[in-house]
Image (cartoon, rainbow, N blue to C red; front, side):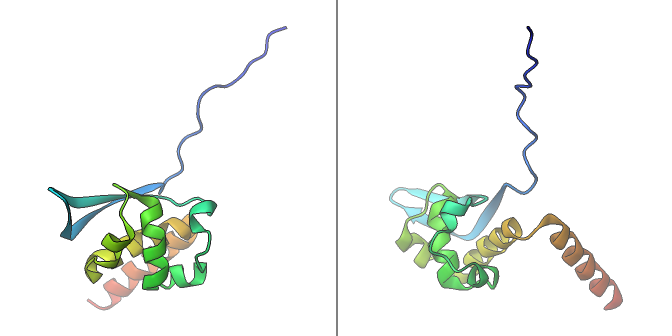
Length: 119
């Protein structure tokens, strides 16, 4: 009896990671962090975080999540010392992870239409 087992991994879903280039690099000892790689959080990484606050870009929610999903892993005090522009850049990527792709596509289309109408 022959069993056909497909051992190929399914295609990775889109939007599972993002890279943010920091406008204000983080200094850690003798090294400098200029880019952060964010991975899409799983449910466990979201434990204890109010998702509505995360979607509203509330700083406390974002600062709680970032040490759990950044590479290199940021320390709590490093996240708290981030410049707002970098925190917002990371938060925007996080929201993109959490919103369904169809909803994101509609939002991007609406933004393009609004920009076209404002020209």
